[in-house]
Image (cartoon, rainbow, N blue to C red; front, side, top):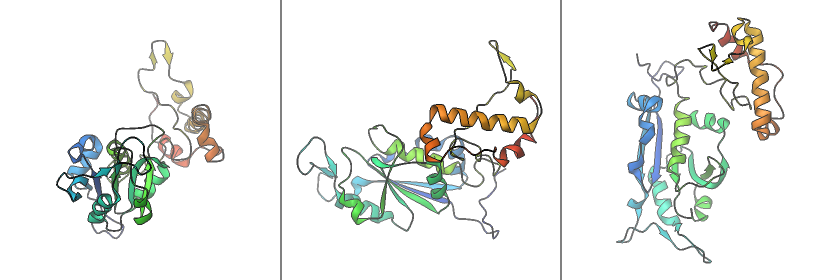
Length: 259
């Protein structure tokens, strides 16, 4: 049964509103129309509007880009066209530009974004944006990783999926996302399920012990170990791991059945 998005006062809250500015609006909702995000979209927990940047072109060729000042290869999105597109949807929601030159997206940033009424996403193409757009509008550059994509559309989908899954009513239990990777500055601990033995590999004995305190301690230790080995940058960024497993892990384990 669908649970409406209700605020603390008991009144129905406004859905999380996402506006995407792109040269390829037909790419949306794409994957966002399936699974958790798609179900939440159909249930009205969030809304999505994709606007074609080319609609704001002023010449008969509907040009949105031009050659880079100072020479060089590729084309650059014009600031006047981009500004007109941004102004058409600006209403106080955060405005993010998808670009490899942006700040790295983090789970903390996602939680901050989802706490508001929604966001506006500007998808880059070609060589990127005229830098003056960042001076003229409250536009924040964001990157989803240290690699290059053909455009910002896939990055916009990544950000929206990360946000939508945290909306009330999307994942079910309010604590569903509390122990996932990055929530406490650590990667998540490894998971196991039946069969107990598979191809000669057996689920760790501690997870079959029924001792929930030991399970929580083991999971925290594995999270610290895996983070140190795979993502030492996270350890440095968060000043090392906490000494105790999260209390939410203990809460969840007390309800878990032994494997």
